[in-house]
Image 1 (spheres, one colour):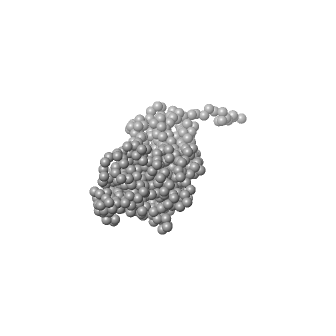
Image 2 (cartoon, helix red, strand yellow):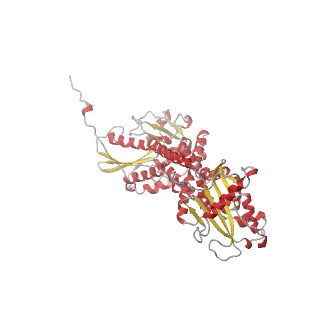
Image 3 (tube, helix red, strand yellow):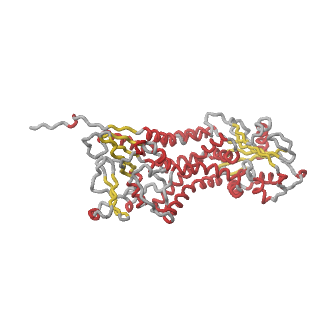
Length: 563
């Protein structure tokens, strides 16, 4: 009886696989950037173990509240305690913002009340938060040129609430002369505006716990949606090469990892988590808006820009909602996918800009003042601001920016710009701006070796309804496999995640069918055939899109990657 060799006893051949160091470093940086996003808030916010400020509390009525808070602020913030000439001071101990501005009302007087906002108030500290009483007080300064008719009240305070919950207190007063430099200027007056943030000790701990859980959730999503697929690809290559059938020649591989940012940004749950994070810290966003409209300190402005950059999640959440409705109503062709890097850059610049404009453009200032005062009950007018409507307006102004761009870009490309030349979808150059620049640092990409892959993007150009993410470009998440045979680079493969392609269960009419032919590789192959191949006309497993036959070749062993 002939003996059969026991295959389990035969040594298993291994293939050398290494991760490209540049790609690994860039992917790790993206991982850390996304995972640390919840904790970035503490570059400007206070950690919960910091003692809350000692401030007056428990007032019997509004008059008592205003008198005590005004006396408290005047005692702490005056010429003796503030730096000489400083127009913006942050009291980090008490979480208080102090703004001062020298005014010359007699140079503009007399001004009608209707002209006061556009000609006198623009640029004043905390303008968008002014109540009607504060507006009347300041406008009275330019109502007459007769100094003897001017009356300087002691000032006042009002509360800032979000859904009736106090998030801060604002106080203001006017002093004769230039108190910033103590210069003798009889025609000058100095306006001081102080914002005291309200801090709830238990709430700070709740936010801290929420952010820790958010970080864990984001790391979990990064692993399940991206990095575990990269690890699986690495292990498959080491075990049996990139071919469906292991070759007999010597092969080794270099794997260039992609950027998982877009994979996470298209996740509506992650976007919602960050959206909630920003809204529960809306008081800190208000402080950032104050800083953006007044502060001239470069270091604080940079921190402020970094903090306001978190509002980019307003835009990402809007893109997730837009993607849902585009898929639901099969309108993907109306939207051009957005570069995530450009969204981040745009919002980073737009957030501080709109904050500055809101205090320096009359129409915007009036709009925000109306939003803050309209929800306030009549009996509490000038005693408090309700911030909900203003926060909604601020959120929508940022959220609409990338959505508007996507619809506009799709219209322009379709109707005004003709398609010029052909695209090499397999090249790393077909990418987002950031990834194109960073991947150019990978030396093997400069080689003229033939590359394959990217067919999924050719399909998206043929039929946008096949996109699973119609609003965000997922090209940055692609991995690149550099294949060496006998120590010579012979092929570069671009691998995309199959999850970016709509599956049959989601959209049977615009889904790609599986072919009868198996993939010659260890991953899926999207096969696009020209119509001059007669046999494709008879093969029902191919889908016909605009004269091109499209089919998905599956590997023997299931894979999330597609060539």
